Length: 135
Image 1: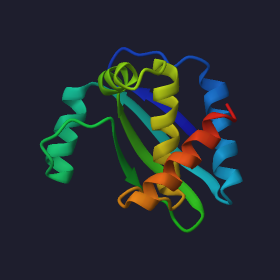
Image 2 (image 1 turned 180 degrees about the vertical axis):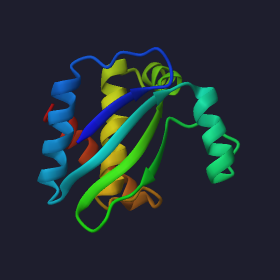
Image 3 (image 1 turned 135 degrees about the horizontal axis):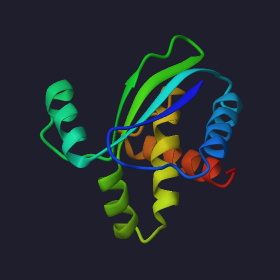
Image 4 (image 1 turned 90 degrees about the vertical axis):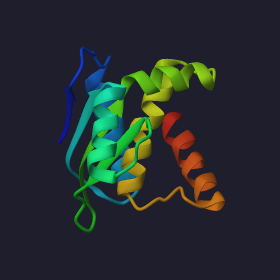
């Protein structure tokens, strides 16, 4: 089950379609959908989480708490709408495209994909692009 929550005033367009897209992406990666909570928030809210839980005093677009057990994908994914808007401008893409990239990025981490090394980043970006094309 995919749940969308807001810590700020924000309305996810086509939430049913987005939910189905995420579900099919999880299935396509050979996993099962558990409970995924997307929490849309501000930079300030996410910065507080970053400081308190990860001891990082930096802005970020996403923080995820992974509760996946074997192939059952579950977790809480916090997304800064402020950061997504800023990054969409920076990368010259639409807000919706950047938001969906961040959303699928979190799920791909839960499916076992990493992005620390150069090679891992290439694979992650390729997977993001693939699933963005499937929306």
